[in-house]
Image (cartoon, rainbow, N blue to C red):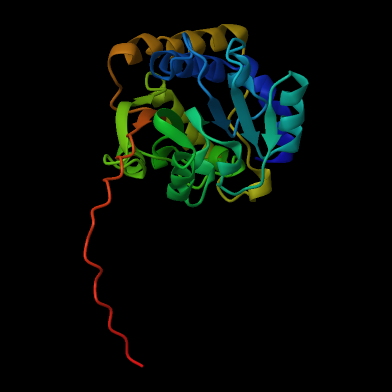
Length: 267
């Protein structure tokens, strides 16, 4: 993330209609599958930013955030959160094991996304939950993705192979940010034409505060997806929500006594 964008980001996360509605959808999935509403699991939030999601669960005390950006880490710590600055490498074993890991709009920033998922799996207890959100549909690619240093946008068909069925059980897989997709698509296409030929440094992200009435209306439309996602899924959208559970590691079979194999060697 560009440094100038980082300084704005917490304000958007706290107040922008898209982030606020998205957080409600994420919280619904966490309460349903991560059991944050009734238990105190050990929770790791990777790429936590300034800790807005972690801070929205004050009753959960056994939680840890990891973040690359120093300014975001300092801001999160000022709120009393245990957030630590990390290097851009995917190895979390020094932090122990976790019952829940959240990766909200994170793995699209990682060039080798399968290595990132495998690194998360290494620090999970059996039956632990992982919640992932990612941007969807390469047809929506724009300068917003460039400014945010994305490597790709996903479809469900390209995301699920990162979580093979012999290792993971899929609890929920759906597009979201769906009802506003026609508007998002039109805005992205217009922006791509307007910024065609510009240098990367001249390109901008999409986040802006509009008139209050417009932001309220967009929030209400996006927020309404929460009810649908409680019982069903959307077939298309500008984002994807995936919740998976780590399958239990098979117990090792007792060793059986065998006659040692004969080994021949050439002098």
